[in-house]
Image 1 (cartoon, rainbow, N blue to C red):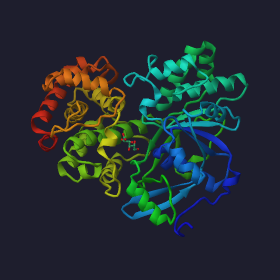
Image 2 (tube, rainbow, N blue to C red; image 1 turned 180 degrees about the horizontal axis):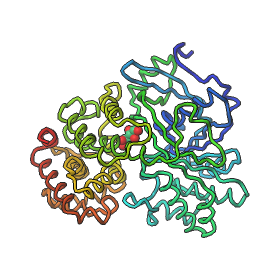
Image 3 (tube, protein in one colour; image 1 turned 90 degrees about the horizontal axis):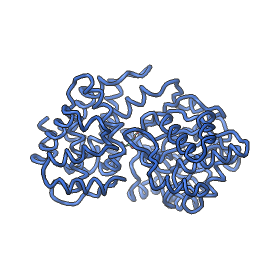
Image 4 (cartoon, protein in one colour; image 1 turned 60 degrees about the horizontal axis):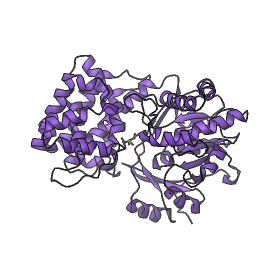
Length: 479
Ligand code: CS2
């Protein structure tokens, strides 16, 4: 028996039909897009059940299948915790176990939208340019054997091809990852992969498949065993994998859904003609600060974002980064109030009820830096303005991926380029200058321009030198 104060689906789940396939069924999707769809179903029932697909591990399926897809969301904020059981996920598939089943779902006429949260690296693209990485091993495999895909682009293109041949409408592809112009980027990747297979398919993808841009925002740290136990106690039932999140949630979507969509605008999503200003505001202020806190905070010995934010020197750094270096590069989105937005961000980062690990955010930096920090750097440099805090964040990433913490212990660096970054760092010996110069040469991160921009390379090298000599805490304090 569920505790009486826990909200649960009020619609008849047995009547729920799948209209959305979601690739990348992680905690973020379950605490964000699935909640909006759940709210739509509560308000006005419709054919919008979600078939979730894990592209790698069976863990989520193994947790959710015995629960019939139900799971709990714990929303933790200043006012305590609210619990809710969500019913929108109708089934969970594990792509590597059965790619044919995934393709079968993607080809159902009733499926009208495919949403994606596959993280930056799941797009198999070059992070500096946004173009498909044609040498990506997964892409090469999917080109060689398109009927058994492994990557997200491979699944989408194969399913689109089958739909085209069957005379079905394509689905709308809605990226919900923190990429710049995530819809346009996805469209370019799909078009390229499709035309490598068949120019006619490439043209059809270009003409017929809508890929709206979207900005997604909710902080959803990885669930810990303690979270699971605490949720079970409050729920009055076991949930093998609940998700824990904050009260804040935002979803801004470009309204291009030729074959229909749930009425997400009725439940708080913002449907707008142009997502770009929202996206820049979010990627640069929130995610840029997050990555800054992650690398510097980790090096300074802080396990979580809220611990780092409790250090006045770090709180000052984030405020300075946002106000002095990021804000001048932004166009204020219609109706937004940047001062309130930034104040809310500070509160969200400081939320002690969330244990968001610096190590978790530090993951995949090679895929994140371009849109979180380096776009801002380019705009600042073009305006002839200083980039001190941004350069410090980049230097902290360099110190981090070199793989040794400030006490000489190993850092578990997770990044698709980890091996190459570690080899470059090893080749640089202990010198800050050599390390900066070696890592600035990683073109997928810094492009062709930044490594030859002295104002940037000098600022990064000076910051890295301070980090190596003084450590992260004292460097941040000395800003
Ligand atoms: C974080 C994001 O892990 C990360 O890199 O910066 O997941 C962040 O929590 C979300 O984008 C918030 O919307």
